[in-house]
Length: 355
Image 1 (cartoon, rainbow, N blue to C red):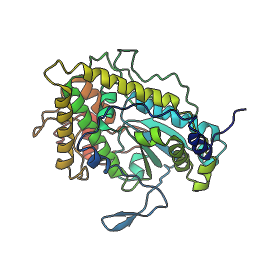
Image 2 (cartoon, rainbow, N blue to C red; image 1 turned 90 degrees about the horizontal axis):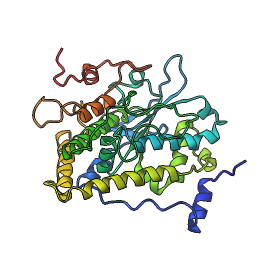
Image 3 (tube, one colour; image 1 turned 90 degrees about the vertical axis):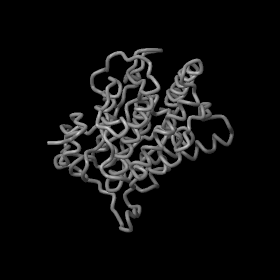
C-alpha cells in the first residue's frame, strides 16, 4: 500500500525543502490588462454569502431528474486542460470511498453552459479552470491539435478512473494545422475572454469553483483540498485528510507550454511583428474586450464567432472556427436545454442571429 500525503505533510516537507518541485521558470506573459481580467474570475461556493447588486444570492446545485450530481470540469481546449482533468482524477480516485465522490459524475467539456439557471445547463456544480496568464492560455488553445513538435493532441497517456475520459476539444481530431499566426493568437485570446464572460454569468447563480493555474502550480496541496471538498460538498474537515496528488506531470505540461511559447516568440524577432509588438496587440485586444463589455459583466456576452471590430463579418480561419465550435453551447448535450435564441445561434455559428 502507498502512503497518503496530506496538506499538512506537504507543508512540513516544503519547510525541509525536499519535495515539491519549484514551479517552472515562467516567461513574463502578463499583459497590462491581465489584473483587471483576473478580477472578473468569480466563484460561487454553496454556504458562503454571495451578494449581487445588493441582494443575497444562493449558489444553486440542481440535480437533473433521473441523474446523480453532475459536476462539470470546464476549460477551453488545450494540453493544460487535459492534464488538469488527469490531476483531479488522480487526486480524487484515492478517496472514492467518500460517498459524495462515489455518487457524482465528473464530466470535462469546453462548451459553455447555455444561458439560464441549473435546470437549463444540467450541471450541479462546475469547476472552472483559468489558464493564466491569458496569453499562455491562448497559445495552448491555439496550438491544441497541432501535429508538430511531438504531436500535440488530446491523448495524455493517463487512464482516468473517475473523471470521464473525453477530450475538452472537438470529439474528432482537427486537421493538421500550421503554426499559429499573430492574428490567430489574438483571436484565440478574445474567444477565451468571452468564454470566461459566459462562465462568470453562470457563477452568479450556479455553484462554481474557479481554479487558476497559479493556484495549482504554487499551492497544489491546498488547491487539491479545495477541489475534493467542493466535489464532495462536505465540511472543510474533509480537506485535512485529502491526499496531495502528484503534481509533476501537470507541471511538466505547463513547462512544455511555456517552452513552446518561448520557441514561438524567439522566431518573431526577425519578423515584422517583434515580441513587444505582439504583446502590445494582445494587451490591446484584451483591453477592448473589457471596455466593450463593462468588465465582461454585460449580458449577453460577445459572440465567439464575431471577432472583427465593428462588423458582423464573422471569422474565417479554420483554427478560429474549430475553437468557436468547441466553446459554444452544446444544445443537444444530455440534460441541456437552450431556451435563449442567442445560444442556438452560437451553436450553429450564426453571427447575425436573426430568425
